Amino acid sequence: MVDKEKWFYEDFGLVQIGFYSTAEDEEKREGREGDWAQFEHTNAKIFEDFELVRKEIADETDRSTGTNKGIDDKPISLRIFSDRFPNLTLVDLPGMTKIPVGDQPLDIEQQILKMIMHYINNPNSIILAVTPANQDFATSEPMKMAKEVDPEGERTLAVLTKLDLMDRGTNALDILSGQLVDVKLGIVGVVNRSQADIMAEKPMDEALQAEEAFFQKEYPNFAKTQGTRYLSVRLNVLLINHIHECLPSLKDRVASLISQYEVKLNVYGRPIEDKNQALLKILTK
Image (cartoon, rainbow, N blue to C red; front, top):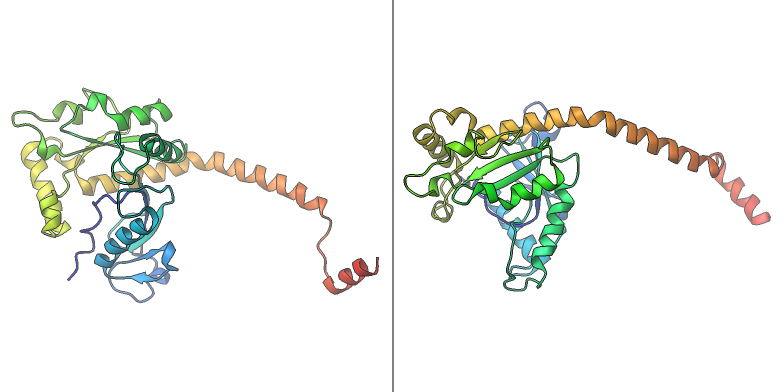
C-alpha cells in the first residue's frame, strides 16, 4: 500500500497545498474511502495514489521550470482531502539561493527574495520561519526576513529543523526555551526524515514515532510542545485565531468595495428587462 504522506517533506519549490478535513463533510467525500488529492492544473482530476501526487508535483515543476534547477513564480496548487489533517493552506516557498547553478539566472537571489516577500508581506498570512538547528539561530536569514515584515512578531512562528544533526555535546535548549531569541508565537522543533529514509521510502508513521522518541529522549521537558504533529495542531489554532483577528478589517474592506462598485454600477443605468426591444431601439436610433 502506498504511504500517502511520504512525499510531503521533499522540497519542490513553490507549492501551494490546501488541507481540507472530510471528517464531517460527506459531500466532499463523495463515497471515497481514505485520502485523495486534486491539482488545479489537471482539471480537478482525482488522485488517490499519493505516489502519483508526488510524481505530478515533480513533473509539473519540470514543465514549468525545466530540468536544470530553474525557477518560476507560478505556484503549483494542490488540494488534499483527508479526515486526518486540520484545515490548513500552506505555501512551500523555495529556499534562499546565493549562487546560481544550472539554468538559474544570475539574479536568482533577488528573484527568490522577491517571491518570498510577495507572500510574507501579506498581513493576513502566518509566517513559518524555518531554520536548521545546526546553524546559528541568532543570524537566521528566515528570521531576519520575517522580522522585516512582522517586526512585532504577531504572525511569525519559528520552526527548528535538523535537531538530530547538531554537533555531539550540544543541544537546542536555549533556542526552544526562547532564551536566545524570543519568538512571540513560539519555536517548534521538528525532526524530518533523512535523505536515506526518503530513498528507502520510510513510512511517515514510523518517522513520526521516531521523532516523538527523539524528543522524549533528548528534550523530555519540551516533548509535548515539539514535533510535526504538535506543529500541525498549533498552526490550525493560530490560523483560526488569525482569521478572527482579520475578519473585522476584511469585512470593512468588502463593504467599501461593494459601495464603490454599486456607485459604478448605477452609472450604467437600470438592468435591461427586454433585451430584444432594447437592441431594436439602439438599431433604430
